[in-house]
Image 1: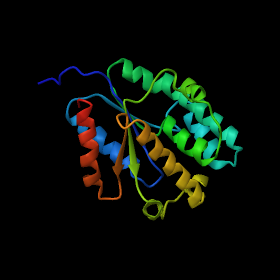
Image 2: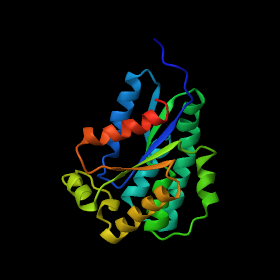
Image 3: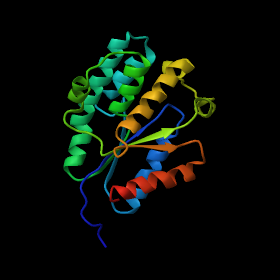
Image 4: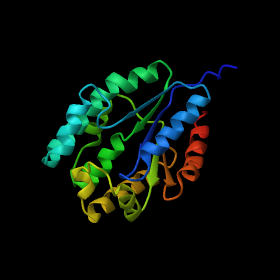
Length: 206
């Protein structure tokens, strides 16, 4: 039996590196596809035609915070126009590893930049997530998971004070809009964490 008609959904997975975003996104995509949904998986930075080049610039070079921010925003605009908006327009579910809230957490809170909300909205090109899943994990646990990575980025070496500001920013977003932003304790086994992710997808009508 064909699945009932559903509106497209845009779901973003957020959290610090090591929180399990890629794992949970993959589990969510497989679960949705098993239910007959068209699913597009993507990520930032790197999801657009210019994404790989901008990702290399961002992660491989020391940049002024303002330059870092603008590169993220440029890649986001291209990403929305080329990948996210067309997929939503044809009725697909889009699952994305990071979006605007990473900018709010890392560049605004972490770097201490004062960025007007209308600038962040401009880079979204009119597209906002239906759901932002914040996978929250203690920094020590995230760092333990990241041990042994062959190519750590310059973000991996930032100090604990930076990541404390990042976590506080995510917590503030959840407190501000508990319907759109949902926190999940991601410290447990992946399957146990996914049970909570699945419940949120079911709330969206999956």
